[in-house]
Length: 601
Image (tube, rainbow, N blue to C red; front, side, top):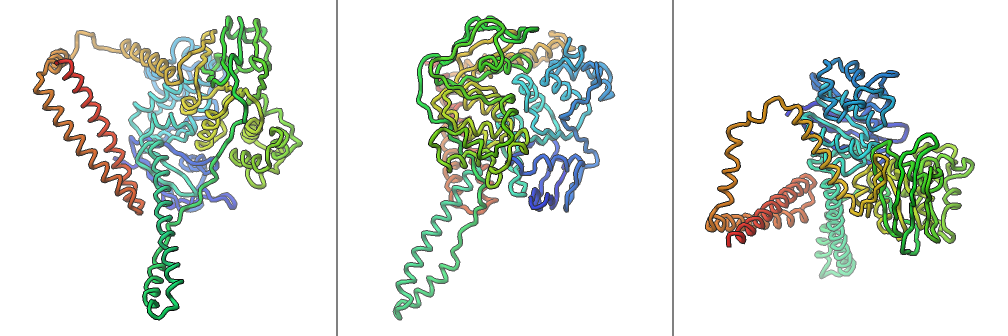
């Protein structure tokens, strides 16, 4: 496997802030790597270094002679009035038929392909950029938060594209669901060090937790042993009869050392507003039409949202999610119909039009103190501020000097300190890192009030949403199922579309099937008609396999708990993961065989 890029002894600092400290990593062909780390750790800086836009202080980045980097551009490279088809031809230099073929992979056809790009939503424009990226035929893709502001269908199309892409990728994302679906390895940047983990983000996070717990247990055992030795030495060093033993114990004590555990970055611990649970409808929309005087976005909306539910508003970009949210919180008047909130509803709103109108004269701390529920302790205010990255002297910053992202986090912190029993949140995770998004999800799940929110982060959606409201094609539909059920529906729709497209593009007629294809049904029939003895024989073999794998897993797990060597620990962790998967496959097969045996009896 060819090495496309190698980072060696890399250092990079901005003033006192060290982003890279003798960091090293290797990127290989056909390996998709999820790049993670806390906000401000230096991920975007490293991407700029790899692109040649910034330089290292010391160290080097070596590149394969045939390296061709593809980078998803955040700016718009389109000309005024240009169509998607014209842009793809101009940007890539590829023939018209090739541009049309690649565009089809992202469902760019009809007016989406031949109409003005300026008329397309942000999600559809990103599809055009992705098609252009592919047409340049790179062998290493660098993607910086590619799912930000993408609608669900575009995210899934991007996933499908990346899974089928047979070249290297380095993807920065806070969306764990997206990383799990696309990346087989994880690169972590923490305290200036790069660590490549040979597994997905969930396995990496679990490995991190296991490592820390193991080290903490080992250190606790060492400290207990030291205490015991110290007590023995104190009692016996002055006695002539036991002085020799005390000196021996002193030498043992000197050899006992705890393993240093690097201090964690502050972990976000977010507490949602403390409110009393309520019952009945929190919100009713009655024959509601939303939009603007010159254009109605959706009409005939009839829905209820119950107290205590967590309703996710979903839909492709440009379909009207934000318009719906603005209408229900009365920052935009209905075209027709009405919105009714239940008695006693106290509504807190997190949206761009809110956090851009904060008073610039206040400091961060002053704003939070004015937003917090009466009686909130100063330490709790500072704790929430710290969870959302306002720590130490940052709480004394004036709002006037805060960036857009900082103002967004400040507004969210104010809501979390309030006593609102309804939270309306428009993309609350956009300015947060993976750990803080996870902490926010946990707090909303524990919240006793009602949440109505939008998000492009599918892991966050899956954790939080209890029901789905889709805004699409001028309609608003309330799905009773959770996000997993809705995601299955969308994936099926996209898969069906891809199959239709593949059938349309197929050049060989149906009759040209391979000779082996005609044998498959017969082979399947023969398998189904196996006699009882053959089935029982396979069951016996599977049971021995399960026993062997279970024994291996138990032994490897025990060794993992005992070792203090980091390399061996990583190897054993991967071994346990692999054995767990094998065991699950074997157990599934055993269940299938038992069903087959039952049918024969």
